[in-house]
Amino acid sequence: MTDSPSISDLYSVLERIASALERQSPPPLPTTDLSLADAFVWHAADGTAEPIYRVNKVDIALLRGVERQRETLYDNTLRFARGFPANNALLWGARGTGKSSLLKAVHAAVNETLDKESRSRVALVEIHREDIPSLPRLLKILAVSNRPCLLFCDDLSFDGNDDSYKSLKAVLEGGIEGRPENVLFYATSNRRHLLARDMVENEQSTAIHASEAVEEKVSLSDRFGLWLGFHNLDQTTYFDIILGYAKAYGLETDPEQLKREAKEWCVTRGSRSGRVAWQFIQEIAGREGKRLEG
Image (cartoon, rainbow, N blue to C red; front, side, top):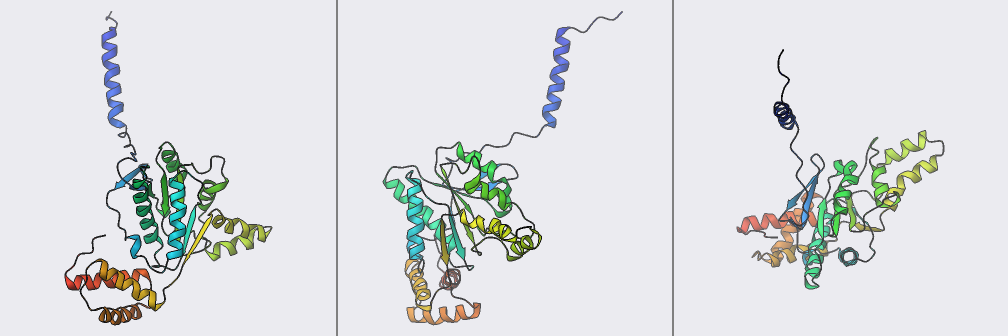
């Protein structure tokens, strides 16, 4: 008759089993530390926010033709940072008209003001359009931080049978939990109502009450307390932007020559916008061998 295994033998077997299970398990997910930087990009796949130490932005003083939008968004963001009520904002309009540039510039300008007031700086957290379904998970992470967070989605819109807009609606206003007090949501879009026309028409054709279906779709934009419209520039403002950039970055091309070339540049592209102006300045800076440090 063989001897029964000892307690020490059993412990040894259990340790080997535990070690094997640990090797088969995935490594723990890295944690999100919002103190590492002033800007982050949310990665839904692994549930982390990647720190961005140098934001691609333009100084707020160089943004022309959007003075009203600039003041409104700056005031709203500063109120939020100071702990007062503020609205979610939708920046809508044609491509290249300065929506995301203004948002990033306002974030930087507000943080400069907060530094002077010895207040906590605002974190800018970007969530990609395709990661909107993970928004509730991200908000839980941001909510446990004492830091004010500006949540930003660029080029937000919905097409086809995409129903992820419903989770966004609940987060912005209607859900039980709602938006955390330390989080504000800003979005840019080429559409004022965020939803494609065919989505609304499809709902009308299949719904028992077509008007209610349309109201369901349009109401998403209503969750944003601020609507700021952006439009193509007139020629005078376009030239002002060009000359402002040239002065700020020390470009030496004659101003009148700049205007002539800038006019030809926008004609070949079919529009006058902040993006077109910036692309033209990059062309001139490259020609002069200058670097554009933002």
